[in-house]
Image 1 (cartoon, rainbow, N blue to C red):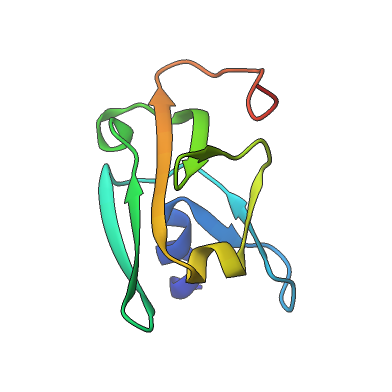
Image 2 (cartoon, rainbow, N blue to C red; image 1 turned 60 degrees about the horizontal axis):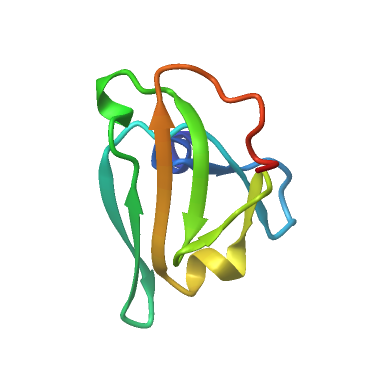
Length: 97
């Protein structure tokens, strides 16, 4: 359970064991860096997450918008920048925009 909590606090978490997808959730930190192996880093940005902006308005991975509620294991392991646009109010259009 503690590993699930750590991943969830970063903004994604596994839902079903044995599947290569992680559900996107609300990060708890404005900024985090994860060493994903082979010298690669996943830099997670979620400005405002630690100060009450709990709602996701957009997510990009290496500058490309993610129009889905999940991220693939291979995308995490490739490293790069995962950027959450956070807000104080929900956006019912996300992830469809």
